[in-house]
Image (cartoon, rainbow, N blue to C red; front, side, top):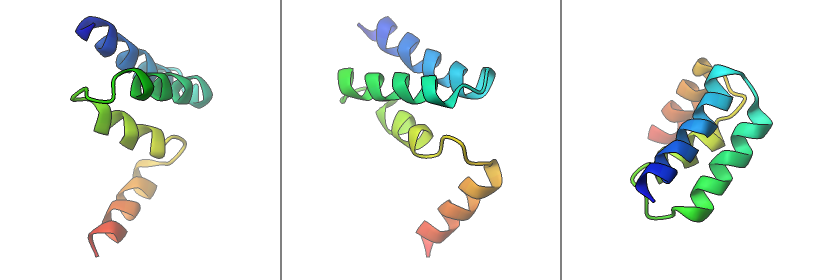
Length: 68
């Protein structure tokens, strides 16, 4: 199960970061989060899903807003 969870997360990440397929990445992140709610990568998947389509600069600006 651990290997399957990690593979699903990496599949989502590769779709997002590697081939710029945000729609497919979102589908895989959601599937990961549905299947593995207790997994250590859950919060990473949630963060990445929430920030699909944003530039690094936009993400940094959002994080700075949350800090204040």
